[in-house]
Amino acid sequence: MKVSVIGAGFVGLTTALGLAEKGHDVVCVDVSEERVKQLNSGIVPFFEPDVEELLQRQLERGKFRATLETGLAISDTEMSIICVGTPSTDKGIDLGYVINAALDIGKYIQAGNFHVVVVKSTVVPGSVDSDIKSALEKSTGLVAGQDFGLAMNPEFLREGCAVNDFMDPDRIVIGADDEQSGKILERLYVDFDCPVIVTSTRNAEMIKYASNSVLATLISFANEIASICESVPGLSEEVVMNGLFEDRRFWCASDEGEYSRKRPELISYLRGGIGFGGSCFPKDVTALHRFANHAGHEAKMLQSVLEINYARSDAIIRRLENSMGESVSGKKIAVIGTAFKQDTDDLRESPAVRIIASLQTKGAEVMVHDPMVKEKSIQEAVGNVAFDVASSLEEALESAWGAIIATAWNDYKEADWPFLASKMKSAIIFDGRQVIPAEQQGKGFVLLKSGNADDFKAS
Ligand code: UGA
Image (cartoon, rainbow, N blue to C red; front, side):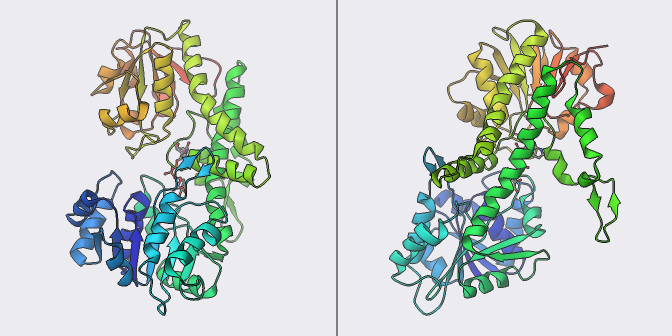
C-alpha cells in the first residue's frame, strides 16, 4: 500500500520504516526541514538501536522518503498515519498537534477515494470520534466513514527495542467505527503474524492507556512492598517477591495447559527499585487519571501509582543518609546512570533526573555518569541545577561519600564494584537496578539493596 506517516519522531519513524520493510511505499512528513534532510541522507536524529540501518536499507530500496510537503504525500497515498506528540497539561493531554495534523491532512483529501486517516498518537477515549473527527470533517467538508476513513491504531513500541517490537508485535489493535476503515487497516498489517483485535476507536484508545497503566502499577506495587520492607529490619523485598513468584499463577503455561516454572517477562516489572520514568508511563498514567476524574470517576489507584513513584527518589536519598549517618549536604554523591532505562539516551521523566535535583536541593555535590547521554541533555533535563559529569565510573566514584545506581547499563553490570568502591571516601552504594552481581555484593563496600532495611555490610 502507499502510506503517509505524519511525524518523524521515535514512533513515526519506526512505524514508517517498519511498514517500508514489509513492502509498503512510505512517505514520512515532518515540519522540520533539517530532520527531513537528515532522514533523506540516511541519518537518524535520535538514538534507537537498528533504526539507522533500517532507514538506509529502505532508502536504497526506494521504499521510504521524507518530505515537508503534506499535500504531495496525502494525494499520492491511500492512508495517513498520525504519529505526533500528545503532551500532558494540567487539564489533560494536549491534542493540539494531532488536531493540526488532521486539519492539514484534511485539506488534501479528495472526495471519492476513501483516504483513511489513522491516529497512532496516544489519545484519551473519545478523542478520535469527537475532536479529531470534527477537525477532519471541517477541513475536508466530507463525512467520516462515508467519504474518508478514520481509525485508531495504538502503538506498543518500547524504547530500545522499537524496531523489533514493530516487526514482531504481540498484538495489533485496530479501532474503527466503520467497517471499511477497519478492513483497509487490516490489509496494511496482513503480513504480520500476531492476533489482530478489531474494535471501536474508543476501546482501542483505552487499550493503550490500560496497557501502560497496568505495567506502571506493577512497578509501584513492588515499590510499595519495597518501602514496607525497608521500614522493617529483617525484611527483604527480593525474598518476598521470589516467594510470590513460585505461585503457579506466575508461571508460564504451554498451549496444552502444562505449567513450567519459567517466569513470564512481565514479572520483571514486579521488582522494587528506583521507580518508573520515560515519555510514556508517567504521561499516560497521569492522563488516564485526569481523564477518569473528568469523567466523574476518582481514579484513586492511579493517583497512588504516581505518588508512590515520585516518593521513591527522596526515600532513596534518605536511605543513603541513614547509612552514612549524616546529611548529603556538602558531600560528593555519584549518580550512576541518567537515562530512564538502559539502551536509550532518553531523559524524559527519568528517575535519575529527579534524584539529581533532590540531591542538589539538599546541598550535595552531584557527580553523574552515563555511557551514552550527553552533558548538554542532562543540563537541559535538570534545568538550573549544578552537577559535574565524569567520563568514567572510576572518576565518578573517586572520593564519593555515596553512589546511587539509577540505570541498568550493561557496562555497570560488568563493572568491578569492589575495585570502584575502593576509590570512594565512604563506600556506600544504593543499587536501584539490581546491577551488582551477587558474587560482588558486600565485597569491600556497603550495599543498600532496594527493598531491604538492613545494609548489606562490607566484608
Ligand atoms: C512503554 C511500554 O512498555 C510500551 O509497551 C509502550 O508502547 C510504550 O511505553 C509507549 O507507550 O509508547 P517504554 O517507556 O519504552 O515503553 O519502556 P519500558 O521498557 O516499559 O519502561 C518503562 C519504565 O518501566 C522505565 O522506567 C523502566 O525502567 C521501567 N521498567 C521496565 C522496570 O522497572 N522494569 C522492567 O522490567 C521494565
